[in-house]
Length: 191
Image 1: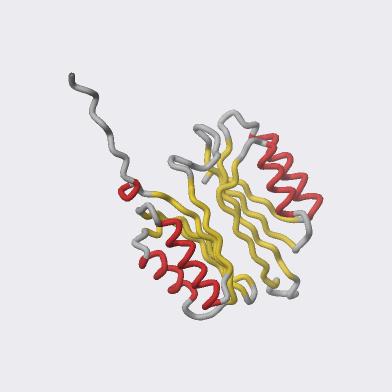
Image 2: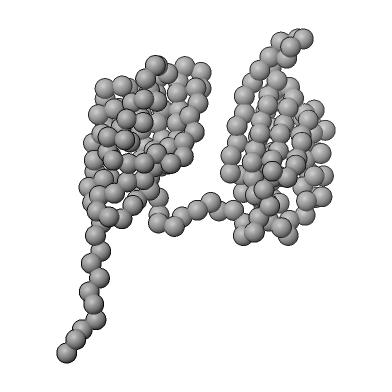
């Protein structure tokens, strides 16, 4: 009697995804160290975001690789970098097929904010987007001195998805209220 074919699952051939977050004192070579680590482990760096924050450097990297012992090798290599270079590194395996929590058939938007630096700009703007059902995919911000006065100006840009059924006019009204109360300029446009 013939049985059903047996499928053999080989972990070594399955590509697994990870997010690595690293923080360390800014110095020449920090990006090279992290990129070489990913490369030396036979992994592929897919997406990254890196920035200097004061005297510190921070990065988030999405990468993939293969092998049953990949997570163990990652941890060992990261511990070496932490010890040798004084970095703090976190690794998180990503579930297969995981994606952003964006609404189905969502519409992409970009929001820009500029004004005098005040507490609550990010919190209030992010809450307005969340209350409208939006999912923020990217947020960047920085301070810069105003050309004429040197007063710190806060600039922020968000990229987010909004469900098609969302009340866009209600979101615009809420953002206008934030503009008026915090005396900032907010621009919302399709991305």
